[in-house]
Length: 229
Image 1: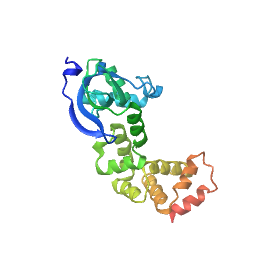
Image 2: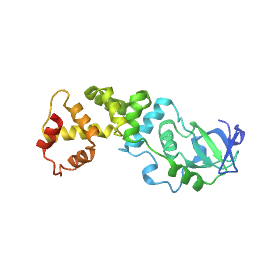
Image 3: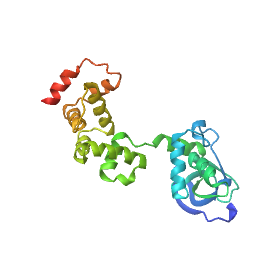
Image 4: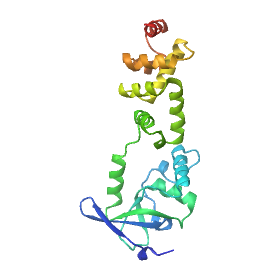
């Protein structure tokens, strides 16, 4: 294995205006995790669903896809991680300390990197996931694909698109099922009908109330009458 001083460090756009930054690969043994990273985002813990998903993704790809950002200069023996602690721990768990991963090496401080990355991350919302499924389902996590495929099987692709156009999300489907249960409705096409009622009448706030232990002034008979209209 090549020493870090013998590696190619390819210059790239500087971070934070003028901090020199490079692209390279480094062994996990040359990386040190962020000391102040929360315990929940450090090491591989049994029962951590997010870690399990990341482990599965790295295992399937063979390595990490997104580089780890570390602070330092070319040729150092050790680099401190600014972003990518979970990728580091999962890779270490799966591959061992000699495994090499893509890295961005920058002279920016750990604090600068950590603050910037963790203040700008935006996970996919329920609406985003539905949008992805309608346009390109293969881009979603396999479990999400299965979950949304069940929705499609029950209400159809056209209804899913209608939900999106009206500002709804995959959660609206869950709301529709809760309303149907509350009203004692069952049978073919019922969930689709309730779903259509929710998004066309703006009744999703009521559905939220139903899901919060059915604490609502609306009675099932009123809902049934509206659905039959």
